[in-house]
Length: 257
Image (tube, rainbow, N blue to C red; front, side):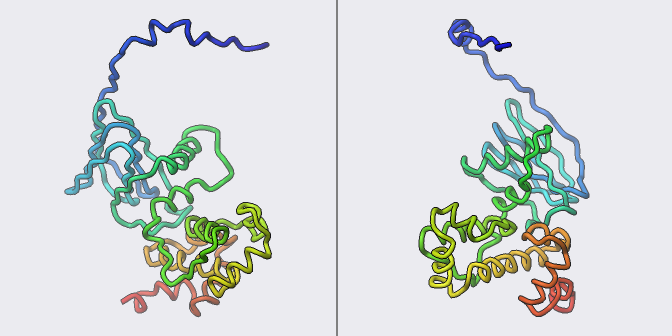
């Protein structure tokens, strides 16, 4: 059976009428999520977020990050649309430990829409959308420190993608296909421009990200998942090989003071 399609001109008279938008405002009383971080994305209009003595107003295109345990009340203004997105504390690590407001670009909105889709419907892509959303929010926090960056277009694109998402486990031949070169050429570019093989560069990038996450108080299990290792044991071995100490030792109180 072929579905009927409506003639777009059939109701031209109605569609030309100027119906005013009217979405009532909504007040949400104070609440707290102890097991989830919240990312509140303002699609349209504005929202006042009250966190104890701190007031934050977000407008269209902004996201406010509320770490788990943050008490907050919301005043969603009239004719406004707000998408609440949650990220489990136990499943994925983050360096975002404070209330933070971030403006997102138009080309980044697709990741937030995909996360909302996966949390609100049965359409759930196999990709880890939470990790990609966090990568956008943490972009400045996860700067590369002393990590040398390649300069040729293909290698630079691969490096940028891995800094964006250190848990991406694609092999060099997969990356080479993505940037339209050969695996051998990509490997040569990393060695010539950074002094590191592709594998060495990726490990260093992952370890830098892991160290920041651990310093921010994330668990070893959640950091393992975030930076692309299969299990905590393999991550701990890689971390020890790189830093000459275990993740637990790295964040020991006597070391951090």
